[in-house]
Structures are given as C-alpha cells and as structure tokens.
Image 1 (cartoon, rainbow, N blue to C red):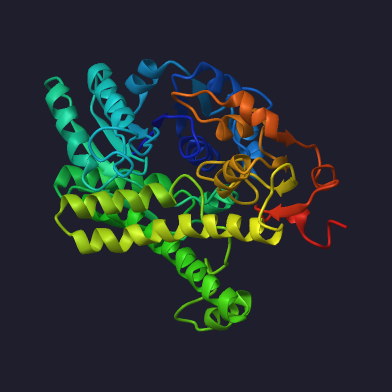
Image 2 (cartoon, rainbow, N blue to C red):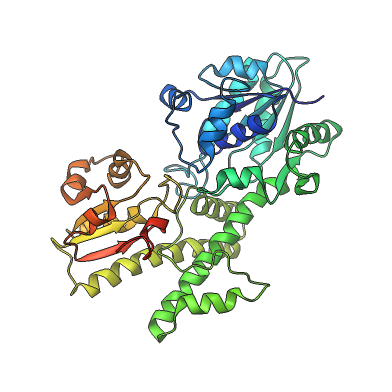
Length: 426
C-alpha cells in the first residue's frame, strides 16, 4: 500500500529538513512534523526558522500549510500516519554504563513507547536518528510488547547522511538513500513502501536496500571513515610543521591520487559537529561490547588525535605570544563547527576559547550565523558549577570581523566562512 501520511517525531536538524524535502517533492503525501518543544514548533511555523540551512526557508514556506505541518500534537499525528520517522536526539551518555561513549537511547525508547501506546492501526516505524547497531532490535521488542491485537509494526532503518551547510542539496540530490529492513515478507514490503517515497525524486539505482543491521552500521562506518581522514591529515600536519613541509601541498599531492581523493584532507583545528565524535565513540563502545579491544583502541585514536590537534593549536598560539596570553586580546573568527551552518555541536571553537579563558585572555568572538546566547551557553559549563558570569567577564561577542580584530594581539580563524577569505577581508 502506498504511503499517504507521514509523521516525523522530532523537529531537529534531521527531522525538520528531511521531512520538509519529502513534502516538497511528494505533494500527494501529507507530512506532519511533531515535537514536544512548543517554542521549537512555534519557530518552524514562523518566518524565522529554528535552523539555518541554505535553501531550507524556500522549501518550508512553499509547502507549509499545504501538505507540510508542524505541531505539538504527537498522539494525533501518530494515529493518522502510515509511516513514522523517529528522528529524536541520541546524545552521548554523560553518566552510567558506557558514559562518554555509548549513545543515550532514552529519547528513542520514549518515542517508541509512545507509538506503541497510541497507535490504533498498523504502522511502518523508521529509525532516522543516528543509533548504535541493533537499536532496531530494542525498538521491535518495545513495539511488540506494547502493541494490541490486530496491529502490526514493521521497522526500517533509514540513516541520514546529511552534512550541515549542504543538507538541502544532500537531500534533493543524495549520493545514496539507505533503507534497512528485516528480510521477512512484511519487512521487505515496508522497505519497498519507504523506497517508493524516495523514488518520487531520487533515481531508483541510488536507493540501496540492505538488512537492518547493515543499514545501522553503515552510518557509523561512513562517519568514522570520514573523521579518520581528518585525524590522519591532522597527524601529518604535526609532522609537516616539525619538518618544514607544507601540509596543504602534501594534502594536494596525495589528493591527486584517485584512490585517495581530496575530500576531507583539509588540515584544520580538528573536526566538530554532532556526529563524528559521537559516532566514533559509539563504534568504540560497540567494539568493546563485542570484546574487540584492538578495534576499539584503533577507532579511539581518531578521537584522541582530534583532541590533540586542538591542544596543539592552543599551545602554538601561546608560545607565539611569548608564552603568556594573560590580559591579551584574542580575536576568534567563527564559532560554528563549519561554514554555512549555525550548528555549534562539538565545535572546535568551544575547546579553544575555554582554554583561552583558563589562560586569562580577553576573547572577542564573531560568527555571522551563531546566536549570541548560544555562544554563551556553549562556553558556560552546564551542570554543577554555573560559570556564566566568569565567561561573560572574559568573552565579548562582536558584530563584525573588524570589530573583533580591533586591537587584538592574535587573530584565530576557526570557521572557514567565505566572508573571512582574504579577498573579502582587508
């Protein structure tokens, strides 16, 4: 049976753009995006969307109120839908078993229980959040234990491969769409129904169908392989600086080898973003659980290398400024973890600025898209000690790059925004 009604639980970075594009490309499908956060839903219904992505505004404004709806009525949307995307947050656990590495699946479990409680007809449930391998198994257990007679749930895994800053382009023209399902007649039928939603605009040969576990693991594997390239070139950048080689030249020479390619070989302060660190740590945790300590140690080194690169950068700045930055003004250009996004999750700037504050520097920050309040939130330690006042004493947020750099002892370029290029800045 073709899908006519989609509900997406979670109006965040994945659910919002993905389902807006589905509504934009499939006028015959009603798409409802639900979230318990009233302020976030209000923002999606306003002129000022809660997420900045090039091209997202036009798509939302074009379909909103026609076949794209944003609401906090989770139960109503679940009951109406034939297909439900579970697109909630899966942060790394802060405490308990697997703290610092395993994903916290509380939100996924909560959403799954809700579906089981309120569904009055059979549904296809699609796991859209980045989740550790075999999460679908626990979702299935919950759905089967809580479902009522005559109601059947099929589970698909449909990981997203969006990059912040190019999410809409990635959705309109994806390299691949991956759909995993149990290889039972019902599972294969559900897989086909979801594939037909995507083939409204994606060529059929780009829709890859796999078993459930392959699909879940492919997402972690892809992010781990990309992050590993960044850590590899950053490890080489340390050798380049020690020997007098130019890392950009080395990367260019290696990148011309068609087997290696140039993507993700840009030496930098390290990778940030919501997925790389989280997914690698997930892979580390999974390897440990599967009693593969050498595999765990291998992937963990990618994260260690990333932290080392940030610390090395700070040390370099301090040594250049005669080994002290106390009361010196440091201009930080860029706060988002990469250009063309307002996303600051795991941004390198956070680590750098916290280190500058500890060294008693005065920090002036400018980023064209990140909200001032977000910067202060990211720099203040949430939890036991509230150091917001301490942060505000050291950090000034500026309205332009020139204002940030005025009278600065050092200018630190963290995010590669186009407006920071030497052709755009004096």
